[in-house]
Image: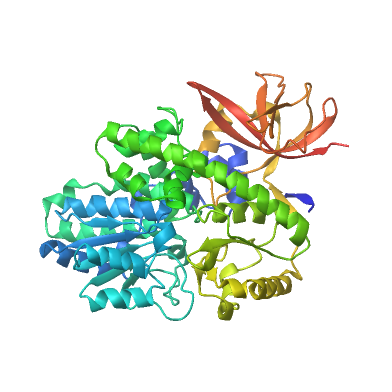
Length: 576
């Protein structure tokens, strides 16, 4: 696979107009124009988002009906149960709903599926566990339930009302018969931005609507509760679920990340940040959520019981929350070991048997079901093709798939439906289960469909260069204005710049447990030298004492109370 550097074209005149009107660095203006932010009004909303930019929650279809049902439950002192998925989106959705409902003297019971015995989502098994504790009047299914037709029917037959808040696409035309908040099943919605919400964002909308109803009734509890204080949970789920960080999601995350960095607001977050080595008084970025906070919240759901991270987030006692956080940290270390072993074994199988296939479908009875999603993601990135990794679970081959930009995994699975027991998810991430005897036929069918989609696909990796940059221009003014573009993520990627004709004087050093990362320093004429990090670049170390062009990202690094500028190496070419 070839890496192609491509200069992103943009109207330099429009960028200059923005620079004069906003008085910010010209490179920042160039990036905004490249991303379609071309007017002063759009730029100000993008660079300085405000909570008043959040739209009326009742615009989201289903929110009004669900909010009124919750009002009925509150006035009627009804029993409420919450079922949520065991990933970060589901965990934070549960915690947010618990926070809001407890304000109105509702004390819901919450349930998280046990992966090994109850599977994913609103399964029959978890429905039976829920009913065994006493039939609730109302059930909230969060980050699951859209396809739970049989399960919702079972619960309704027992006298339960059900509200589903979910963002997963339906696997077929039939959805659960209940009150559903899910922009992906309302096919006539013209507002595409609604479809970028993950579940915790939709739960925020529902809770915001609930508070508005009670505020109109002059209920003091609704005025005392501040929804902005819940944005730390919304940011965690939104970033971890890899949804687009534009529009309202950008507002959620901009303020939510500030909440995460502000200690003393939520004991569980303080404890999680401590075990994740996030220093107090330093900013929290999406990368910290993706690589530090998120994996620890996910670990119990992958290996054991995700009730623990919910308890941590809901705890008001710091010492108790810290005990939970250390247990999460230990479970995450165990997960890393299991994941590493499975990845190595799976990679060896691909190289031996499937390296030339248009798609990858792997199965082993020995693999842990909790890590197959991570492994499939790594293989999809490494081989730039769709990948499904399956383990053995309750008599079936069950697992997760990760895709690439030019293939809609959900559409492909729909075309393999005759071979599957269940499936669902997003175009780039799916869950799937099938009988073992159908495995070979599924692999063949899956690869055939992917091959037909790939005929016109370009497999070259394109690195979009925002603009050329001089290393001496990386000063405090530029770093201050670059911060305005944060948070980076889906829909707002971190910009990549070009440094031309630079020279590395000393041999790059290897670091990390496996010595797979590199670091070196670049000298500057008017300032201190600057550190360069190359993640997983041990097999692509740039040479010394020759002129090189570097594709880089620029950020601030915080370590041991010190703040410094950091360059991340994306790729390099010889200047010659």
